[in-house]
Image (tube, rainbow over all chains, first blue to last red; front, side, top):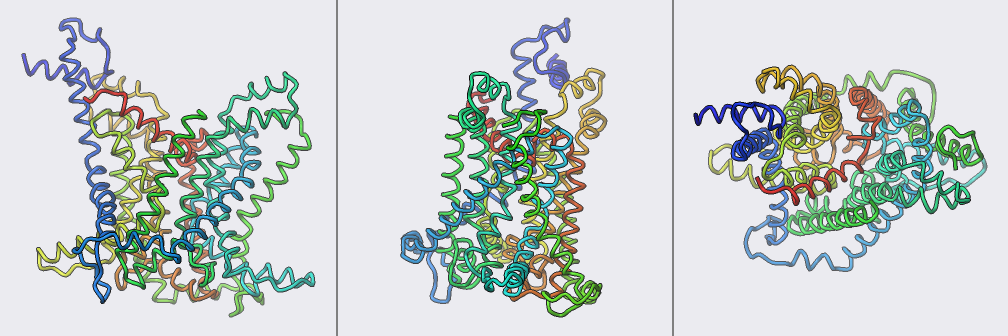
Length: 314
Length: 303
């Protein structure tokens, strides 16, 4: 009898979860449902075990290790000593040099985000207001460069901006000055906007595409002009996309490493570069760990801010 | 301000012009790089005629070829493993409720959101520490190399595969699986005959994306690679930092074209999801999903 119950539970589970008329012989008792739900939940857990295990081992555990290392000390030869725990690395985060690098990176990430937003909004709006067929083509044309090789796309700008690259040649052909953009913060800005623009376009597109156009029409019916209707209806309704896109651009811009390494100058160190140098050249792992952790912390704050803002606007 | 289907207005024209410029911005650098990779001259910037000279040089370059081999080995291995694990993860998250689901959901998204550099740092420390422990216990002398690179690539690819597959699962009606079950199909039969064929395009799309990401990754790979295990992007990155050469142009174009083709095929498989702005088309939905699952976890009673 017990085994029969178990079998029935098994069968019940493979069908819908709540269907009391499934079998008239045995009434589906709350216990039976509960047993079925329990087995179902166990099955779900079992399926997720490989991913769970892998992510805990190769993601969560490393994350904890970074935190541990950030409190470790360092021998005179640069070896990390897991003893003499201290907060020296965190204290160093407030040194003038680090503050300067952080401020520069923040500003750069902020300007990148704003530029992406200004360029993307009308662009996403245009795509979202096309017919579905055209929309799909336009969207795929955004996504192909988005997911293709980031390193090479950045490298292309190095070729273009180089001292006798295209920009310079064009400028000189028109009798202008030789333009020196490469190895300055401006080149990094161009590279970042170029690399992360789709991060802004796609959520904006999704938000605009989803919005209820009858509301815009209603505004127009109430004698709002095009601009007012946009400002009072379209823009507020697409705010979740604005916030999501901004965070998705801001976070990688803040931790950018490849773009400054290829396009940036040696004098204007940025956070990503600085973190890498702590591990690969300066060999100060505790300090590098503290820096990475600080960046992740900011990232976490940004994400929480997004959830808050999103919750209000939705 | 034009709604769908409205006649073209000035604003609409301006928007169209702006969009054309944005597309130019997206594609012009790529096209210029492609054109210049066929330049015959030793100097990258001076055009003297078309030739395949640098492509030939690339195939004769041992360092490039060995880096390419490393890249392919890592990409294939990590794609196979992450596709299997990622698909299972997607099914578990999309179709089941279980204890710890909310936490797993959050954990699965983190590798996508976190900056490359921080993940690279995490894995560097982890492999340094864990290889040290393993070598102490077993008396081996394992070091960083293709193995650690593959393990690292799987770690970030699982999440991307899961997102793509989830978008696909969300599209089809669970009633299909239930119908199979009603017809006395076993769980395995249901999966094999109903679920798998339905999600196959999503799985294929996810696998191709994993392959692309693995072939393209620089930062994380650089941190967890050892002597002689540089992949193609890591090798190219090292060269690029020193300067621009025609050889790099040729190698870059090959890498770029390969990744664009893979992405295009991947998007083809995900067609439905792209149109609906799901999965990778929509990082916003990704975040929303995260929020949704969080509130689920709070409201649903602990089973």
